[in-house]
Length: 383
Image (cartoon, rainbow, N blue to C red):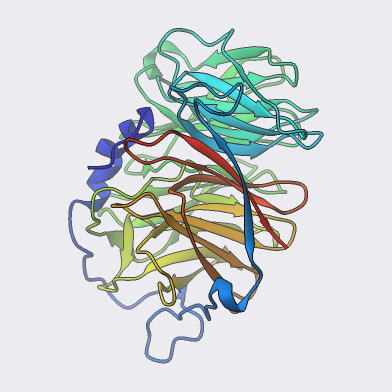
């Protein structure tokens, strides 16, 4: 069984999503499945790396790369300023930085005992924001490595923080998991303002903010259906039905820290690791466009490994997906333009992806890990 580091503490909660096979559902209402000849999701047009550009890799390995401790477990990764990449380390309990020159530095001062940094996103002026899964806690780290944490009121202390979104106004939002989930906003004055998630919704570990200040997350409703939820800048909650339900999964593909992002087209895009459409065995990528959910299936054709796409990142004009093999230390990488999910390119890679981000040159970076092997951070160059 592949359970590596504290990252796997998420699995017992999210395993509920995979406890049953895909439930049958009525014909989609408000759901568009492009190019579907018979009412099922369309497949990507896939090519292999042999018919497309080659990949090259720059690998940072825990215990071998200076500044990257042997007990590290890199989980999420995000682009910083001046060519840097930042990551959360759930093994050491640290926030790490890789400079443009490839130097790795980890910061721990300001993190309390038991801290569990998880998701990380860029804020203003080089500040990075991260969630602390030990409770309803979010933190910030300055470009020089100064860490400050912010706590929701004590009555929410047992709700683990997962997704984080940083706004253009310098404030940050985070969301918690569980039946009493909250959205919380850290104001410019460092105060934490709590907004209750509507009753009956149980958020997964995803949160993103679009250019209009609207927040997006994925949740299960009372029937366990996956719902994409928009919390508008004015405070209203809008639900978008996916007609997707929990499905059975082998144990255990990696659960992405950020399965939902805002794409280059300004719309939310998401992966659906724990959910299926009707009885299809395929994995999906989805978006909400023009008030409608659109699903595309991610075919495994031409891939050399069996992997489950979970991680998602947006570049300047494209999307990157990554997924791990549940049984071996390898996985897959998918590349796609965001508006037409055709011409999709799939790569088999010798890494087990967890999180993914894109740097200023549109190169994807992944965190990777597998039981019994050191944690890795990999820069992927696809030119």
